Length: 147
Image (spheres, one colour):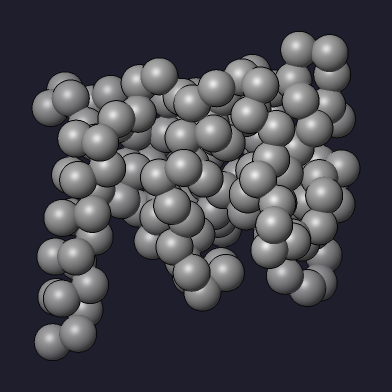
């Protein structure tokens, strides 16, 4: 699915797209950054890092699979597009959602030393302040769930 303008997808791209198209999330609703981190954690039992998300978003956006914006309070929110949900349909079946998504995207399988193509750079509208807000919100949610 990679083109001249979109580098080859990585495992992280597939993992994040699988989280954004999670069956519990309606396609028409944007997802806050903290919820993306949480959904990705549920899928792979580990949280994506700032680097993973910031380098993955340009590939997903360039491919037309994800849009990124801000809500009225200025908080980053992400949304899988119809094209992103079409990939999810192609990834339907049994087994791990992120692995199925990787196959549908033609992404490399997960590897410990995978960095992914960084030729598009970081997503410029994601910054350390956004990450801090998401981490604080995620920590509050996690603490409340533990009660």
